[in-house]
Image (cartoon, rainbow, N blue to C red; front, side):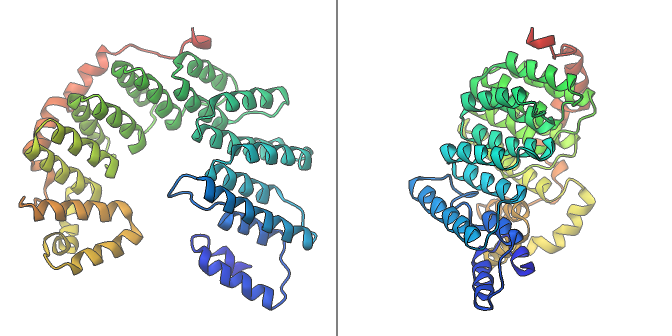
Length: 383
């Protein structure tokens, strides 16, 4: 079964390996089924949401795998059940997800609480993704009543769940519980809290939380920054977009396609087309590298792909996409900038736009902003 194990992202090849196992009369063991649930348990995820047809197909696949397990006298392991729960959650099959969680409770009631917590987290995450906040809350309460100890992941999932109901007070209560149980807030915690306050259009509180994370020596990531950028774009807050992009640059957090899209679209919708193109070029360069020296080295490798008018150039970029989606997206952005007539500079920090952001929102500006923010934000029990 080692061959199937290395084909986690190539299910079509795994089918051939499985067929060969059958022809050679190699009996499947629990590891086989653990991999089968992982490979074939869901249909549309992660590229599309589940729909009626994909859910029917997923149910048929799961049934077929379980029937084969029964035929071979193999019972579920914790891993096979967890992979099954993940598959159901990915397809948004909530009713079946809860049913199988109860099956898992009956099968593995004697196992370590750690593995039980992991299974609960899998289900809570799926409920959260499906916006089933009431069901998630009920399951979390049941978890506590059954003495199934939440871990840091559990609390982060439930804090994120509070963004669905836009309740910052509940989120802060969960943070208090988290702290009492010995878990410290991390980047996921802050991202969820920022998402909640932004749902109420409180950008000042979002910046306060960003400063608090920095004070706690928590390194921000692109997801946290994009959470603010997306809301700023939707509300037409170009000042906030520029401040966050400069903060990203200072923190050496590389942009991603979402970052580029927010900045570019915000400027375009304001009629600032030249600025939009300049921002897109600078951010795309930073997607390749934040280091100017590295960028000059990469220039030799990628300038041909950016400036080449031969359609074959895009085929080569697609090959890069297989290795790095972000790098390919950056090169395509730069290629588009060149096609519409903009000169390409491999020194993004020399851009007029980049220099203006540094001047307006750079470290000296950040210090005065930080001083104006309130201190701690975690109230006791959300009060």
